[in-house]
Amino acid sequence: VWLNAIIFPSEAVTSTMGESPLPYQLGSVMPAISSNSVGFLGAVVGLWSLGYRLTPHRQYGPRPRVAAFLAGVGFLTLIAAQYRTGYAAAAAALVVLCIVRGRQVLAALLVVGALIVTFWGSVLLEAQPYLLRGETAESAAELSGRIYWWEQAIEVWKESPIVGKGLLSATRFEVLDEIGASGTSTIHSTWIEALVGTGVVGAALLAASVLVA
Image 1 (cartoon, one colour):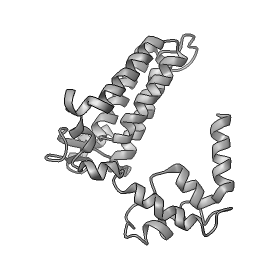
Image 2 (spheres, rainbow, N blue to C red):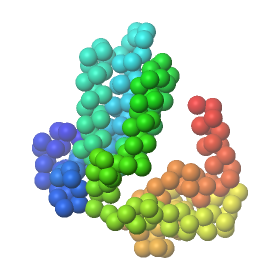
Image 3 (tube, one colour):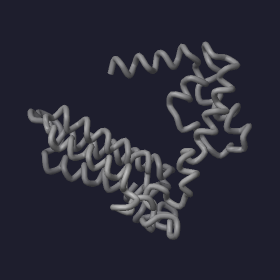
Image 4 (cartoon, helix red, strand yellow):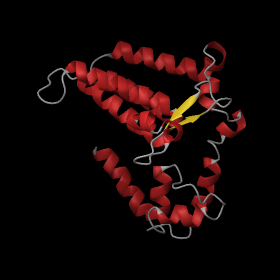
């Protein structure tokens, strides 16, 4: 992804001037990866590397300094991609990571910091422009229109509640196409996707897999 930014800067790096305090947003051309997916990959690399770095008894994998470097690159990628959902997911994962690694004080500080940003961030830290990224507060409250998508998806699910109407295809062709969002690849919710596509059976199996994990 970062090589893309060097080789194809005009295509991989898009300007967000006037929409976000961060002037540029990182994506990828070869392979083609959206900014949100780039942010997701950055979060995964950052969290895995940090988790490995904090593991007390390491036998395999990168050296501690390499793991720390990879964690930094991962979180920098998340920020550069401006993946807002990833910000919240990474913060939650960091709290869990600190707890399981016995760093309860740091976990508590992260929770307090998250609460401050959530309730007073727009006043104290001027965080709102970073989170809205050019959207209005009303649009953000509706999760950029996703709540409406999910409402329409539930209506489609009611037509075949037990086994669903086709994984990936149901939400894309019977929900998004019908509301004029044909350029959107997913419904932006794993659980709604599973419910509409595979019904109660598939959603229950997904929930079971989470519990087992």
